Image 1: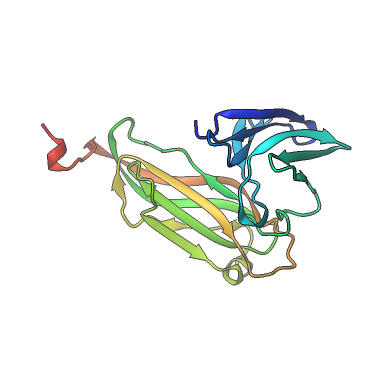
Image 2: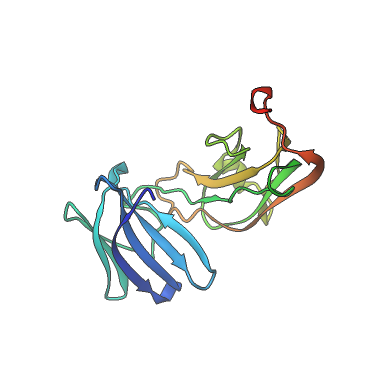
Length: 212
């Protein structure tokens, strides 16, 4: 809904993906919406040269590489030898949907979030926990690049949830800039995220003013 205008749809068979360039209603910014038909999963990219987002005029495959063109006439080619964007580090951000282990309006205790990762390059880590449909994180845990480098394989972390009772939880994990300008920026991959829950009796607790 935030990017209603689609300006291209391109099949990228080497990655088993279909990529759509989509622009915001005001025509000032855009994203690349990606469907992976092997994983049956959706994700999206932002292309931000020099930190600024642009709208897309279109995209195509040329000489085996994916290209996008902005509405300002700049052309960007996907380079498989680096994970940087126009020379700048870009984080990989993975966010779960809202998890309601107790069902709709059920009440749960969420104890831990345990991402299982694989280190591919220098990076720090950040894990954020969202509760009860809030748009801002209630808890953020971070590890520096030096701390991540010292991990034993696999790269598996345990984030203990501070505010454990609620009806819905969401977890976001991302890599952070390691401070090494020479690193290719691949960071990490994620095999999955395990959430440890206990389902409690009763339904969601709401403030007094929301009860009849």
